[in-house]
Length: 347
Image (tube, rainbow, N blue to C red; front, side):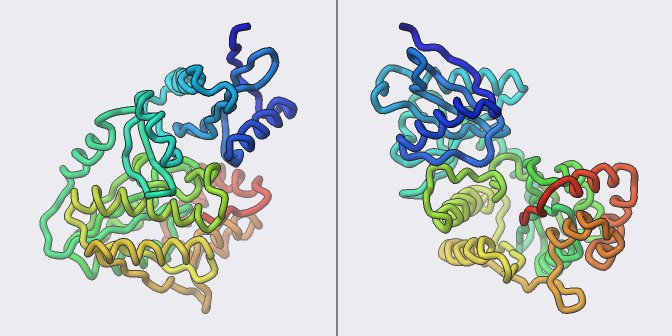
């Protein structure tokens, strides 16, 4: 009997349970962020599966009893066709180190890797090279060139303080705004609010991260079992991409981070980043968070006030432009989205 390829609906509990069982059998945990899942069946038995979230392929597995029959190729072809149908021509995946060769043979190219943990790949041979070439066009001369990466969900006085301090201490500051649209405040709005919040600074260059500096919200953990190992893998992969490529491309010698004493994730991330960057000669400066009334400013606190219908309480925590946005008609739509969420997500 021939293999049958089908899209599996997230609401089909029986089929999704079969997906989860197959992933578990192959040593993979089902990822929490999946928007499309497909399966290959033989006589009503699920023998291969794959999924994606945004433009990142995830949870690819073939039953060990059916490996060597070209099913991984069929899974990839199906998912890539679905991606192209959505208009995504740039497609990425994360995989275990020992599986990278399989994906290389099927047309994926390594961007960066962390030994023993993860390999980050894309479907275009020159994708990352083109990103770096475009980045190089923004390089400016200076004896001290620094960088900051922000999600700004939304842009707060804490973000502004971090950027102002870094700008004051350096000739040039490159600001990267996380482009992935997984935050409750859409990227276009986050970018605009950052742009308005730093327009008084004359030595800054603003960038989109594209898909290459990875958001904590979208880094997949389905093939890493230990929670702290997930954070470590994400941090080390981010650092590999940054130190070996982006920093060299722009002449960056410092990276600034904001401390977040209450966040276990951020603390591990910052420690790893400081160790790894300074090992390669890039200074890593962790600044204390700006405080209001003895408490650190955070974007999650701003979202919590909005969630609770206490918009006036965000005023001391955000620049005027951010506050004005939330008072506008466009801001009202984002407020509705925040208030519909059960919990405020901390990223």
